[in-house]
Image (cartoon, rainbow, N blue to C red; front, side, top):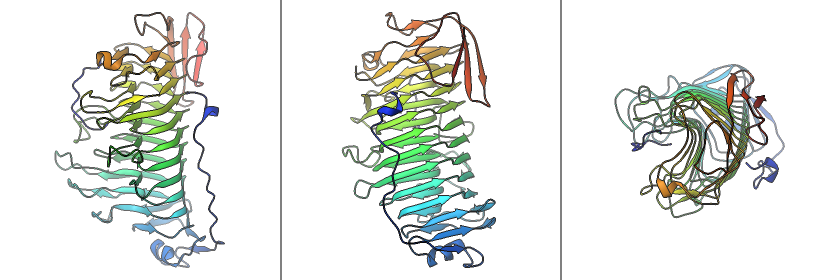
Length: 442
């Protein structure tokens, strides 16, 4: 959830049904040759200047104090272990604030470590970014990269701080298609108002998988819509998958992030997106585990399928937050499903419904557990939070006043942080509810 003044007190279908597919890179690029930095070219930038489509840039172990730009199709950047792109002595500017900038097709970046680039005072025009994929790019693969210890150095109270670990952003006229971000680690990022990994605008057919995102001061993964043109359906991230990621310790705690006044950062967030599957993720110790909303007035987030996720102790606000945060000023959500998720909270609320009030929203076969100070289920806005299909869930207290959900007595909960599983002791057998990482002991 992006920065706002909160007026409230805290009180998927199976993957085989996919409407999207993992990006398939079909373009054929020229036969390859290798350019080794240090022997064939003095710098990475020089190697890129020499490269033709199909070439591979090999970066040996070492520290490289440079920002690089990839604008030739079919380039592979392959970093050997210990190769670090270090921006700690560089100064980002409004026209040059990315450590790796990509505006091309058929580009792979593999095994590169990036760190150090920082914004040292508020700015409305400078955003430090680890890897930026710009409009018009397609068939991009970012794998095994590590991005850390960069972003904003908060020197004064201001909302004009922004940074990203990875940003993929396109406008309505120049789309980005076929993006894979896999097995990357993003951590210790100071992000201001922005996100560790963001897909923003006209971005389609993406797969965000097996990443480890942790210890950041704003949203972990964000699929964004309508920031540039709320009336254009192309201005939204869509037709993608977010799966098998681990997101841990994501918080906009105002004691750290001066752009916020509350803890409301989601581990995984869809803001205005369309037709996105979110499954098999493990999200823990975030302000919000998973949030599905639309921040822009008169817009609708639709077709989001949240299935088989394990959400543990996301206690700042909610395990799951659903719907826009303000009935008058934000959009709503329709045709979204939440199935077979396990949500465990010891503070905050396990499941919060805000501005979402349509029977096409289906919440079923989930396991919700609220213990200690946590609440189980909250509808924040009366009729504007009612009317969703909430049936067949199992919880340790009653979800609603009707009897369409099941209540069981929980005798114990234990969490295995190493295996990323949650074990539940219950007096009754639990069938067809919760995630595959949930172990039930009767």
